[in-house]
Image (cartoon, rainbow, N blue to C red; front, side, top):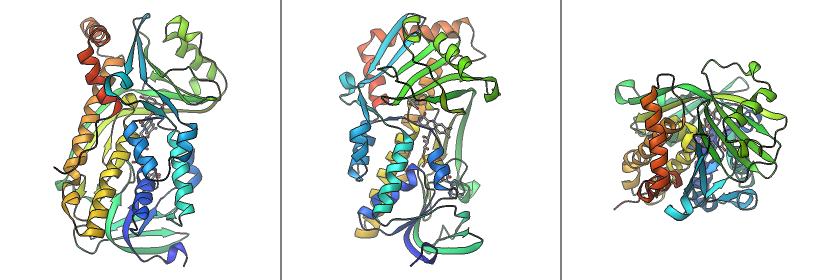
Length: 399
Ligand code: FAS
Ligand code: PHB
C-alpha cells in the first residue's frame, strides 16, 4: 500500500520537524499507528540549521526512543557553559556541579537526520511535501486531516491529531481564537549566526559585551556555531565573513577572541528573538507540541528541549489512552506541559535580559546587569538556581 493510500490512522501528526518525527518514533515503538504530514521537502527540513545544545533529560528521551546511537558517538558532553562580561570577568554555569547533570552539544540537524533514518528503518509513514494540510472536526470523536500531494487530494481519518507544525503552522490556528490565550514578547534585536568547518573553542561561551551579545558554540570537533546580536533590520549582504569574524572577536576578551579559529561560513542566517506561549496546548482531539505552541529566545538553549519534553509527555499520554484506556495523562497534558514551558520561557527571558544590550537601556540598567553577573559569580545559591534551570527541570509524573 502506497503512502497516499493511507485513509485511517491512530494519530495524524502535522509537521515533520524534531517534535513530529520524535512523536511518530515514540508512538511506533509502542505499537500506535501514526502518519506524519510534512509540507516541505526532506532536503528543506534538513537544510535548516538551528539548535545545538541538549538537556540531559532530552538525551535520555532520544536514547529511549532508539535514536541515541550517533548522539552517543558524535555528541559532545560538557559541564555547562561560561559567561564573560566587562571585558575581563568570567563565570561558569556548572550544571554538573550544581545540578548533577551535564549538557550535550549535538545539532538539531543531526537529530532530525537520525529521526528520519529511524522512521525509514521501521517503515514509519512520513509524507513529505504534503501541501494544504487542513484539520477537521477536532472537537468531535472523529477528527480527520486533509492534504494534497502532486495535485491529488487526500483525507486521513484519525483518533487524535498532534500539531507539531511549528510557529507558522496550521494547527494552533485551528483552535478557535476565543479558546486560545496568547502571551507574546518581541525583542528589539536578532541573532546573526554562522556555521563554519573550523575547530570550535573547548567551551560554550556567552558574552555580554558593550558591543552586544555573542556566543561561541559547537557541533563537532570540526564544526563551529557562532552568533552575534544584530539589529532586526540587518541585511546578510552587509555581513561578509571577514566582518562577522572581526565583530565576533571584539565581543570577547582578547585571549578568547584570539583563540577563535576563523574560516569560510557554510551557513549564515538571522533569527529574530521572540517569547510566545499559546494556552491551552490541547483542544478536543488536537494536541500541540513544540514550536506550534511556544517559542523561546534561543539564549537559554530551550526551544528544541521543550519540543522534546512536550513529546515525552504527549507520547506517554496517547499511549496510555489508546493502548490502556487511561485518559488521565491526556487530560492533564496541557497543564503539565505548560508548567515546564513557562519555566523555560521565564528562564530564557531572564537570561536574554541579562546578556543582551537593549536600545532603551540606561546607565542604571547596565550597572544592574553587571551587578547580577557579579552576584551570580559569587553566590552558590543563585548559581544553583540558574544551573538547575539551564540543565532542565525534571519531567513531571502524575502524583
Ligand atoms: P519546527 O519548526 O522545527 O518543525 C515544524 C515542521 O512543521 C517544519 O518542518 C515545517 O516545515 C512543518 N510545517 C509547518 N507548517 C506546516 C503545515 N501547515 N503542514 C505540514 N507541515 C508544516 N532552539 C534552540 O534550542 N537553540 C537555538 O539556537 C535555536 N535556533 C533557532 C533558529 C531559528 C531560525 C528558529 C526558527 C528556531 C531556533 N530554535 C533554537 C528553536 C528550534 O530549534 C525549535 O525549538 C525546534 O525546531 C522546534 O521543533 P518543532 O516543534 O518540531 O518545530
Ligand atoms: C547553538 O549551539 O546553536 C546554541 C547553543 C546555546 C544556545 C543557543 C544556541 O543558548
